[in-house]
Structure formats: structure tokens, C-alpha cells
Length: 242
Ligand code: TMP
Image 1: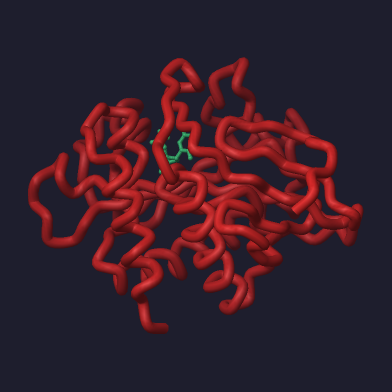
Image 2 (image 1 turned 90 degrees about the vertical axis):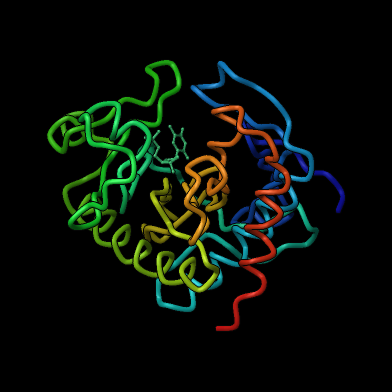
């Protein structure tokens, strides 16, 4: 595909314009970062794997009635997406305690939460993506009250779709981060990506707390075999008969 102007470069993707102003092309990079880009590396083949996983998950979510920015994949590491204004909010849904929830609350790693927990973080690297309260979010006008309700309810629906889907893959969905955007019709679309970069995924039936990790925690925590883990998630996702 001939290259159009680059309109944005993030840590894991580059967005290009296309001939159609309503459509962007997302190129998935092999670059990996963690801890607000203090740790940097490359995961060979990650761009292709994440693009394919995200495409599959977006299609499943869309099939269950939730609008996403996904259109199609013209190449294995390229996705055409609807152009949206990304809301500067990282929406995290957790089913099991891990990561910053454990660090900030003292909950033990692996604690099964009585119900899914939805959290909002401010997407702002220079501030270190801080956890937001509802009132701070509204004070900063990051979203309207109505948008916030929509984000909350869509996040829970997406969690239930993904949890069921990953269960069929033999994987526990521990938690994940999603982002939403607003299109030219003021509709809220699920955007960005859903991949082992943005989810915690544990292999069902593997008791070893390090061996079970199939996501970016392998990179964050130097657990090794990162490419194999990502490849395994892709194989399992593609293997699901729905
Ligand atoms: P956390 O436990 O570090 O807050 O992460 C929660 C989930 O969000 C986890 O699945 C990893 C994902 N995540 C991102 O996708 N991007 C980020 O910048 C961070 C901090 C977490």
C-alpha cells in the first residue's frame, strides 16, 4: 500500500492517513515499551501477531453489537480503522487482582474479584497515566457524564465477551485496558487495540505463576519466551470455533 502522511506515532503503532479522510491505516510495530516507556525493546513478530489478534477480537465484539473502529486488514500488520477522536482515558477492567491494583490496595495477586472492577486512568505519559476518580474526570472534562456511563457499560459488556472468548481459548482474562474514540457522528467506538500488550492473560491449568503468563508481563518482568507466548495466544485465538 502506498504510504500516506503519518499522522501519529504511538509506542506500539503508527497511524497513516488514507485517500479517504474518514479512514486511517494503523501499522502495528514490533516495538515494546513498559513503565511509561522507561523500558524499551522489540518483540519479533509482535506487530503482525497483535494486529491479527486485535482484528479477530474486534470482529467478535462487533458481531455482538458493540461498534468498533475496525474495518479490515490490508496486510498482516496493518489495520484499516475508522477515524475517531480518541478520548484521553484508559479504561481498565479487572476480573482478578494483578498489577497496579495489587500495588495500590495490597490485594494479593490472583484474588478473584467479586465482580468486574472498571477503572479510568488519564492517558497522559508526562503525568504517568494516573488513576482518575469520576469527579476528577468530570472536572477535567475528559468526558461528559453521559459518555462516562457509556464507557462504563460498554467496558463491562466487552469484558464479558472477551472473558467468554478467552475461556474457549483455554486462557483466563485477568484484566485489560481499552480505549474509545468519538466518530464524526458523535458515536463512541471501541478503538486502539486489544492484544497481549493490553491484556493480562493466564494459561488455564498452568499452576506456575510465571509459566502461565502469556502477555506483556513477560516483557515487563523479564520472564523470557515472549514471542512464544504471543504466538500461542494468536494460535489459540485463531483456533476457536465460534
Ligand atoms: P495495571 O495493573 O498496570 O494498571 O494494568 C492493567 C491492565 O492494563 C493490564 O492488562 C495491562 C494494561 N495496560 C496497558 O495496556 N497499558 C498501560 O500503559 C498500562 C499501565 C497497563
